[in-house]
Image (cartoon, rainbow, N blue to C red):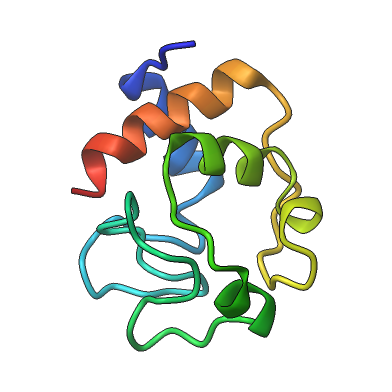
Length: 104
C-alpha cells in the first residue's frame, strides 16, 4: 500500500518528534533517523542503544520498518523504545513514505 508522505509528516510530528529527529547527528531520547534506510539497527554514532537493538542485526527497509512500527516490543524484545506502535496499516505506510524522503 503506497503511503502519503504529507500525512506521514503529521504522524511523525505528533508521534515521533518527542524522541527522534530526521537531522543528521541530532540524537534525542531516541537516535537520529537520518540515513535510516539501509542502516543496521543499533549503529548510530553517539547513541546508547539497548543490547537487543545492537544485536538484532536488522537492516532497515520498508518491510522491516512496517513490522517494527506495528509493535516495537514484540518485534525486538528488550529494546528501550517506549512506543506502543501504530496498529493501522495506512498510518504505517504514510509514516514510512515520509521517512523515506525525510531521512535521506
